[in-house]
Length: 179
Image (cartoon, rainbow, N blue to C red; front, side):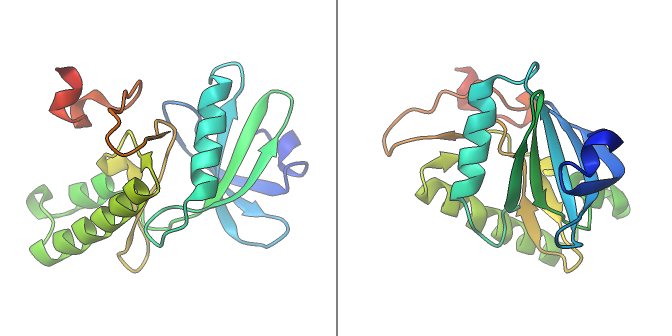
């Protein structure tokens, strides 16, 4: 998101977070609300239109305290910007690496697991599979609560339907996916 886009898109870019598999992530200030937000930039030339549409529709359909919320979608000629809830505490991988021996205290791990399972159960009840659940896609807020992000590899399913996943991070995939 270049500075020339920032006013046009109602956001002032403050910093670049990350470059994910499908786009870049920025920290921004939303001009209308003054809130800090995360902005995911998807370049139309690099990301299939069906993937962009799927991610937007999935995010619009989900509302759960342990899922990052979509606040706004901004479309330009060459990009789509997803304006997302900003979560302050980093991701689960960063949290684990900051701990002694790279092990979370048991009580904290239980709370994180409970949050993740609640969110996954909710998604599955809505007929949605995340598709790339890994420590980097689990954010931790300032109060220690977790929020799953990045539904770029997500898809919908019907009960009893086999889910064919085209994306995801190999080392975090279920083993049956390779059968």
